[in-house]
Length: 70
Image (cartoon, rainbow, N blue to C red; front, top):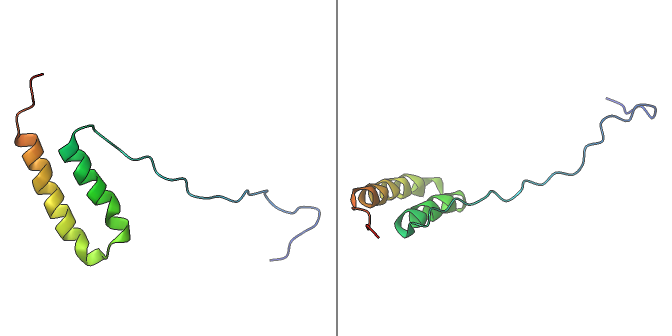
């Protein structure tokens, strides 16, 4: 495909993916799980299942723990 000088095509700016906003709950146990899952992108795929299983266990414990009635 050749470029036409009279119609150069759309002016598309350079695009960089913005850093995704990190979710935080202010519940330390839950935030630790979220951080571990966020780090999966940098870890080998073979480690993902173990991280998800651990995350599930930790979140279940956090949900089963009664809230502090302050």
